Length: 181
Image (tube, rainbow, N blue to C red):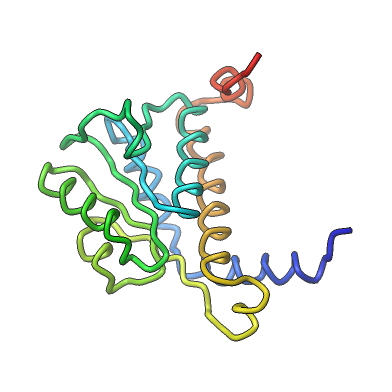
């Protein structure tokens, strides 16, 4: 049985974590995604799973998307966009990926909870997802749960706007959906 109070708690925490993202930041992220020749996404662990989920959404929209670290991922370039996801902004592989991409002239976007992190400092655009860490959160949503849940909700909230700007329908997305027979 679903415990509504736990779902309500997570929903409230996610809304609070996203509350400081402005409409301008959101619109700029959409613009950057659509302006990029190719979109590269990277995260490690659970943040990586969030990134892979967003990558799938973008592929379904018909965009050219790669997950950094996959064997078939090409080298990133100056007309590309890189989205890095790290709660702490200290994940070494994400920071190094940002540094390399910036050297190559790629627009680097980080989604993190730490505005002064090494990842944020090596990014052109920073989206702050800021869970309000409390003792209750440590008990009900440990580690980065709220960051990850809020980030995936934020990314999913971009899909309808991207659909509209691309002129895509749900049927178009369905046609790009992976089908296993």
